[in-house]
Structure formats: C-alpha cells, structure tokens
Length: 196
Image (cartoon, rainbow, N blue to C red; front, side, top):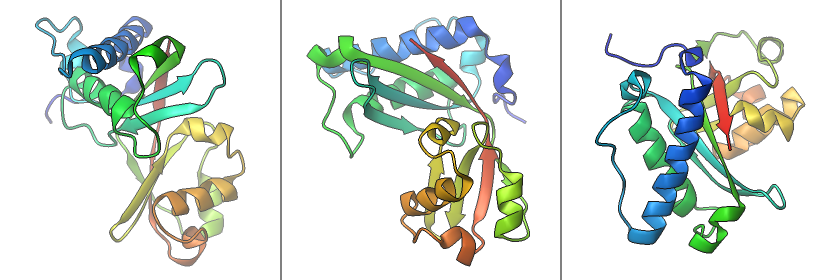
C-alpha cells in the first residue's frame, strides 16, 4: 500500500496548527500574486503522505461561511492537498464571491483532515439511522452519478439524523427522501479539525 494517512490521529496538534498556517499563507500569496506556493522543504513526514483534507473559511465577525472545498479520497501529498483546497475555498467556491485581500484578517481558517471513507452496510432506512453517529461521522452519499458529502461539522446545523440525510440528498442533487426511497451507497469517515 502506498503511503497514505490511515489514522487521522497520526497528525499531531503541532502538525495540524502548521497546516492551518500553510493554508493561510497559500491563500494570501495567491490573492497577492496569483502564484500557488510550494514547499522547498516539507517540515513533517506526515505531510508527504497522501491525505484528504477540507479547508473551511468563516468570517470571525459573524460566523458566516466564506468557502469550503476539499478532497474526499487521498490522492496527493497532504500539504499539497491543503494548499490547493485553501486557494479553491477562497476563490472557487461557486456559492460565494472570492475572498479579498482586505477581508483576510476577518477570516477564520479551519483544516479538516479526513480518514479513509468506509462503506456502511445497512439493510433499510431505519438501520441506516441506527448506524450513523451524529457529531462524529462525516457521510458520503452516492447514487448513480450523484454524490454529496457533509463533514461532521454539519451536525451542528443539522443535529437530527433524518434532516442531515435529507439535506445530504439535496446536496447531491437528489430529492430529500432519496435515502428512504433508493438505498444509496453510504460511506463514513472521521475528521480531525484544526483551526486558527
């Protein structure tokens, strides 16, 4: 097996905080110069392993989301994934206008490192509800060409399991009852979140 991050607890608090700093530097440099930074020296061995991350940007003053982009499956070194997702969260999230340089001091940066998604076997909607763990599980829902994911953070806005699943169906571009009607594939992952 090639080198991927198998256990998110491998990432130390220090490494995680440094990833947040890396994300912030990447965004600032890109907004100023249009360049994507790269590291001459990678400070941690874990950063060289393939890892999947999400970068979430929020306003410190009102808590509003300003961008969230990420990878579900690890396919490049973790540090490159964070750099790329940070820039994309600031400039390419289709829901928002691009973050401006002036706005940067108001932005809180969160980096979530994801565990490898595991398929959840379930018999019926009731069994699915019994097996998912609110505030712990991130979920990926797949049905044919349609796919959506919610990070574990989303439970804070949608603490009811039914509502979480219905909103996830809609995020994937399906009807809210898709999890009841169609038995979509569900994958579960955990995250380790670091924030400034």
